[in-house]
Length: 278
Length: 291
Image 1 (tube, chains in turn green, red):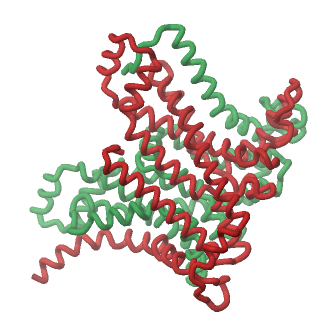
Image 2 (cartoon, chains in turn red, purple; image 1 turned 90 degrees about the vertical axis):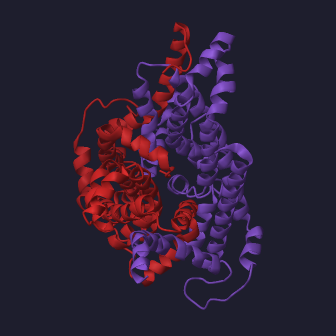
Image 3 (cartoon, chains in turn green, brown; image 1 turned 120 degrees about the vertical axis):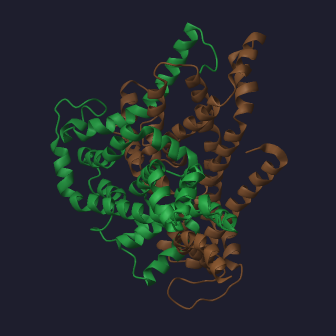
């Protein structure tokens, strides 16, 4: 649709401004990519351009020096673990809110809305002390529980908004066949709601992959840290070795960029629907 | 009767796992924080109740006052610059057809990047030897010779620039979604009246997207409170506390000095402020602002 009709000269102005803004958004990211394949000696003479000699070995060096085989496995485990717990629990709660509608469900919804707005700094220190007593510091399951809890309100609301639109007849038919609520959930609601589970999974997965504050606080053992905090340490350790640091950063962005290309609409719709801080 | 009760409870069985999870991770520690803010606990020894002593101490804390000021500046920056640019950008985007999707994707992509990545990118861009400052200096413009992260006058604004660069595309997408829901006949009527682009924006687009607009105001105010990553990664609050914000102050009090009670008091104030903001927007909504 056309909001306003534009003449040709006006269109030129439009495209000029938009392209200028697009370059501000894009060029710094492009430069990160250039730097990841730039040999160290070129940074003095060709700091902002495309590398004259391409050196892919930056990636191999960074992979070795940063112990990234282990680190990426850690991040991967955190993402998968959180997705399993968070989507299962949120899916159950969303199903109840959307289809079973128990008395007092509003109270739970309001609880989640308040929960979503509490700043992390309010509870991070007591949570740390609590986790210390439960021996959950430096364990992946400890961080997975935290991430699942933090993302549960968002995932619950998102999944609920989809499940509430499913036709009631399907559930009625199954009820007549004697299905119990859990069977309604597992055999009807979940298979029909896979698109929203995919969207929720992408958004929660991205949030976990990128998360910094809780990873910084709850993971102090070098071998169990995820990529976000390792990259912070790595960039301090190899401060002036821009090739290595940029290659590490590109490795962290690559999975996100690939998934974004495939699922752009889901990412954009999911991220703008809930108001999740990235 | 027993069967009936049981049936009613089944719906709650589905909710309990998610509730317990969130309750344990967020609610229990938050309540502990409220309680601890009234104590002088240092994480190890005896816990003494000291009333509102921590809160009084905060008002004498020079760094705390600076942090509050910086949080206010931070909120103000995000309420003005990214919103203006994003509104203009979204409005321009609605006027073009070719390449619109590509522009949208480019604007949105930085929002997908982790804080550590955006920081790494701009640490290099502002590096005195390699970044744009050096390049400008070669061309004879010397205003960006030193890294703005390392100077007292600019550190806070430089970090805000990085977070804003990462964030503004999110606003563009939200605004453009709102703008597409505006009824096209309004613009056609305005065209017949001979309205200018600015008049159409001011008197049609802006009022029609007001709910979305107010929503973004609210989330910017709320999200500016716990802002942490960018400052921690880029400046650690320095130099000389010139970019210290509440979240960083709390973090260093909590995890470097183990002043549990004191840190909890800061956290409690942040929480009260956020709830206050939500209430204000709730009241505005009741008064007919239709958020």
